[in-house]
Amino acid sequence: GLLAQLPFAEFKLLSANYDFTNTVMNGFVEAYNTFMVNGIKIGVFGLGIKLAGLVGEDLFKETVYLNPIEIAQDMSALLKKEEQCDLVICLSHLGYSYEDDQRPSDLKLAAKTDNIDLIIGGHTHTFLDKPVIRQNRLDKSVLVNQVGCYGINLGRIDFYFDSKKNIQTEGISITV
Image: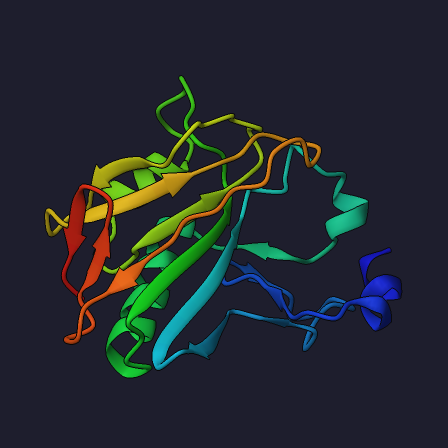
């Protein structure tokens, strides 16, 4: 059904941890995209939750799920180092956190990667009044946010950069 809706989308579909080879979606989804906003280069990549057990196999067919933590580490390094992005954002549909410690989540993603500045999450419909700050593997701050579900809330996070392109936010400073 998603393929039929693509002609109406005025945006790119991003997913770095689904391999769509051998599916009708092959070639229609990109791992990441970059944007230039007022001289600041922003890299954005997407991650999705494991489909098996959540979505019928007849719907996702041969879509291959790749480890989101490993893919995020690779994507964020590519965006930060090769693409020279000043800000790296992950659009996550992994879920904020789980009691089951085996499942990947946004909080684990923040802690187990090096180059993500902001994780905008979904799936668990977590209502956060403001972003949560977690330290990554390099002890740098990562903002993690979710604004609930059903379009009830709209989130906004402002990043400010100094002349050296260091991120300045309320109460924290992240050097990029």
